[in-house]
Amino acid sequence: MQTMKAVRIETFGGPEVIQIKQVPIPEAASGELLIRVVAAGVNPVDYKIREGKYPVVKADKLPLTLGREVAGIVEHMGSSALGMKEGDRVIAMIGADGGYAEFARVKAEYACKVPEDIDLLTAATVPLAAHTAWQALFSHGHLKEGQQVLIHGGSGGVGHFAVQFAKAHGAKVFATGSQKSLAFIQSLGADRVIDHDAERFEEVCADLDLVIDLVGGETQRRSWAVLREGGILVSTLEEPKQDIPEASGKSGVRFTTQPSGLQLAEIVALISAGKVKPALYKTFPLDNAKQAQQFLEHEHVEGKIVLEVKTF
Image 1 (cartoon, one colour):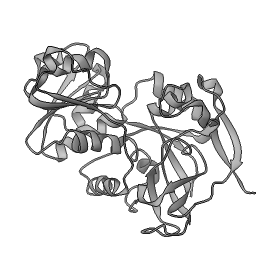
Image 2 (tube, helix red, strand yellow):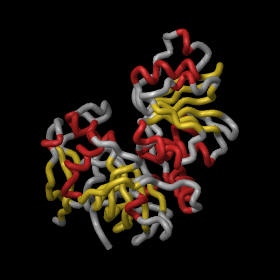
Image 3 (cartoon, one colour):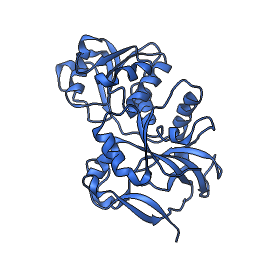
Image 4 (cartoon, one colour):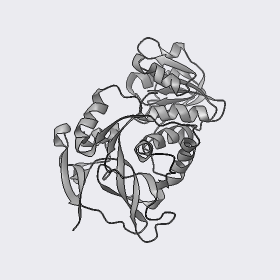
């Protein structure tokens, strides 16, 4: 039986539960691809899964391999896996088990080819974070050209994509961030960047069509006040509470990102055309996945952190 290196957890907990293990290489079933992973994105959901704080992943899923997004090369195709061939450069968002490893298995319909003008380390920043930003803005926020949107947390993995997608779509973009991140968010094209420590966003913008909440808590509660009648509050974190006067006549939704190769193809086309630039902030070797998660959780990050798995 052939084996591969994988970053695993056998119990929930802090960074100390992360282990480097040799495990069997998964087999691609019908309609699936086996990807030789070149790079894997690191996301907040990864350490939430590790801590047992991600509701979808219960203890009965353990042990598991961490990681939700990969970039790599198609190693093998299961029967009925259409639209790809062995050797193709691809990205994919995968399930709760499998990204931090030398190989990953994914449904072919969740994967997207990557052109040669996008390196695979950069491509690994895209599948989960960019996907989440895309679905927040367009699938749930129904953003249209000429509308106004406020993005809370504009410098993070999801936020930096959301700012750029909204601008590419012709929206007016307000974005919040820390003082350290203001110049970075401005460079993404935001029309107005708000220092969340020095300004109250309610005093800067009003009558917005959409708020993307990547922060939660009090920030989310205050966001109702800046929406117009019929405006939408979209959260990736907690269900928007609509039992307050400020929420009257407005709608809120919390969502979980759903993988789609077709949506990824639209995103990749924007990147290839130079209209969107993924921000690769820092890389770590696969063996240092523990340090990568700690860095993401505790340090100032602009864009994405990626694990380097293979070099070609």
